Structures are given as structure tokens and as C-alpha cells.
Image (cartoon, rainbow, N blue to C red; front, side):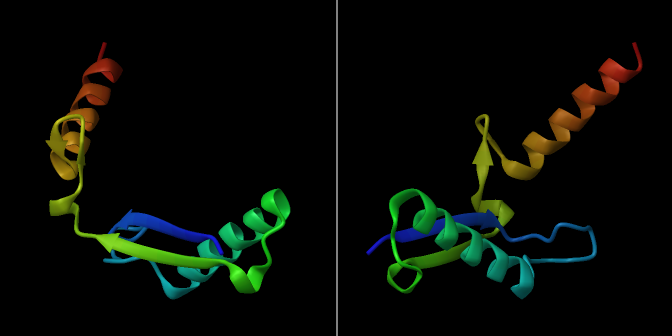
Length: 83
């Protein structure tokens, strides 16, 4: 019985949204379940998928909170484009 946990930041895919939509979550659940069926022959009814939305304040990489990391990355891209 596989249990898959997907963690995503709590933000939408467009600036006007604050979370992943129910439709997007359904697609994730379907896709992961089908992948386990196709690769490991795990029946759909025995696969559990948990989607956790994490506030961006609780998410980070590169030693920085996520939003600060993204700001710095955007600044670097701007600097490279201006060369």
C-alpha cells in the first residue's frame, strides 16, 4: 500500500490565486496513482496520495526563505540580461 506525500507551496500558479486548485490536486492524485500502477503494478485503490500545502514563510532553499531566494534569483537574471 503506497502512501505518497506531495508538498507544494501554498500559492497559486498565477498571481491572483493563493492555493493550488481542487482540479490541479485531482490531476496530481490521478497522475501519481497511475505512475505507481504503471511502474510498480500497484492498484489504484491501494494507493494513497496526500497533498500538503506549505506557507511560503515555512519553505526555503539555498539558505534563504523561498520568497527571498526568488527575489535574489530574479535580480541576478535582470543583471545578466542588462549585460
